[in-house]
Image 1: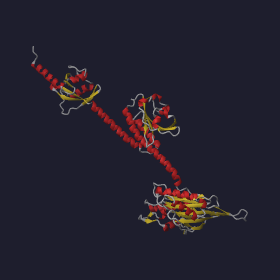
Image 2: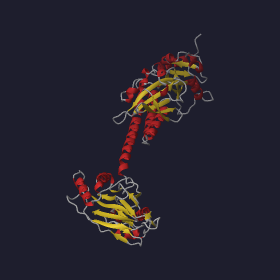
Image 3: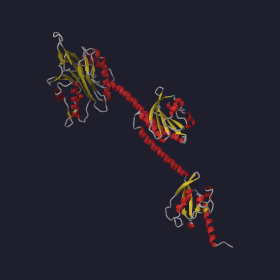
Image 4: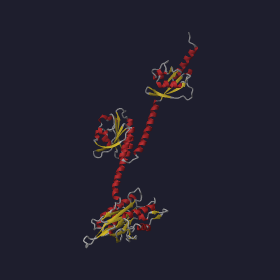
Length: 556
């Protein structure tokens, strides 16, 4: 008996549809509304080895595709009719596919499987690169946020343990036999330490500390790593290790050692390259921090001799000093003072206050040279004019083109009074405040040093009674510009009035009051360096002789 015409038509339709799908470049599988496979093309047959007509999708295809079919068919038993049908994704074997449903005849659903393995790999690679780029940017910010070497080492180890390995160790160049190190385990804070160890025990470590390229991680036997390299908090055994140099500015900054446990995947070539990118940034930060530390040590050492000294009572005479640089960023400048004590109580001490042309570090360098020269000339402190001539010759023969003004004061305690010999070389005249509040301007004048072949200077001798003070100052005080309108000089007259109010005050109090009023006058305005030295005859008491006949003595 011949088959019904309807059945013949259906078979003819399926055959023609199969012929169409057979030429399709993608795997195609057709299922009815109940989830039974009714057709598929040869590509789908080779992809889905268990596919056969009459099987349900749950038997013929992976679970995610069978579930997608259930979601696609509406409750009435026919394909859902929404125009924007969702795309389903999943894996078949080692490949990744997008499954696109299309309505077919008789309520069937045609599933087109598009291989997107390469695209998914590219997307994952792009996402990984974005994550790595973000990490490197954040790492640079963290590493460059501090110029402290220890903090930078800890930050390097911490970042590496969080993003590159289960644990990280930063090894700095050896200091003698000691290796400065920083350890970090993922999820825990980094710690600093120092070990006495031989870096040659770790393959590639000695070479990396000298700046040589890293050795591949596959050449390192993790079981042979010494105990001093493994952090105390690291649990389990080391499964793989990578040694990467930290390049610095011309000199190696150290080495980064990455450790992974036996349960983690070993380092691959791509990860080792990324570790070098991170190491380059960490090495630059460490090198900058180390360079800053070295420069800070050098600056601190040099600054120790450039800063004005702390003054005190010398051979029965009270000395007080104050210094304020032109800029808060500069600790030294062109103003300076020194006191060179006499070798005995009877020998005069030499006080020096000066002002070098200019401000900042350049002026401070010449200041240091003048101070050293004057210290060498202290054996001839009794002859101020000769000292100034020799200093003038030394400055003219140097490469400096700056000049300076000076005032020299030979100070000697004579019983209860203080004898002063004052010589000015182009410097503002010293002021003396007497006990009754009178202020005297000492008339000593001279030419500045370091500018002319010959200089002239005159020496004046005065005496201070107990409680009286001689104030030496630089023109930064009188030329301080400020006041109510901000453009008026502090001036000599105002300074003399201030000093007159300080009659009977200790020398340190005189200095502090002048500094305070000058600073208030300035407000926040710009100013020159300011330096002051107060020489005070201490208040004394005359003691009678014990036997009632010999001369008594004075005590401070």
